[in-house]
Length: 283
Image (cartoon, rainbow, N blue to C red):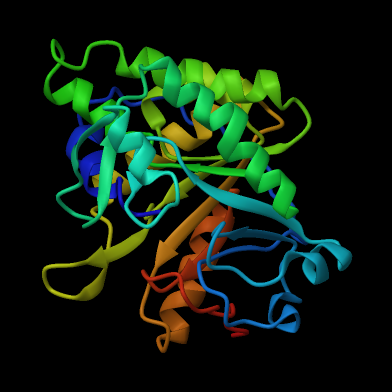
């Protein structure tokens, strides 16, 4: 999460606005994203769906036994240096360049069949074998941005992103699939996923000033339109949101929860590192 956010913001304004459709929200559903192994099973008691890292995570069995839906993190558009398969991906010539905003994470040429085969036959089976119920697909904004920036050099990235998501669904028809943003292809893949995540819809983190901030109103409204329009393509699609805010500002966090629930979304508010659980304030 977040690695593709900066690239996404650069090209989002170029996408056309869409018709907004009101979504439903299951009041009892709570979710979180947590990328650490420090929390105990009891710390997750308030949540029904958990997005966890495949390498740095709590034990899955106790969570599954308590009925939690578990999604494993999978970077589709980038490869991270700390993943066990990074060296092989580099040797295969799939790396296109380091993400300037996230050290150690490199864009992948998703047009290459060998990357699709690795995702389908190695990475997803590994997650399911660990005990995850499905996958959280991240960083697809990166190849989409590459094609927007250099359309001749990276022609076909958008088509490949759509094909990759659809291939995952075809091979794994019964797992849960959650897709982070990738708004440009949402109309085409909305029927192939169960959940779309809007990251930093209302609030995000300013790395230059090292502070949390509201998303500009125009960008906020545009994201609402994309998320709600996706539901018009798949009425069963759930919309989750992930916003970042100062954890000690309980009033501010509560306001974000109210705003996103009013939009018909299922929200979570956390710190940008996603290495701690931030409970929803009871105000």
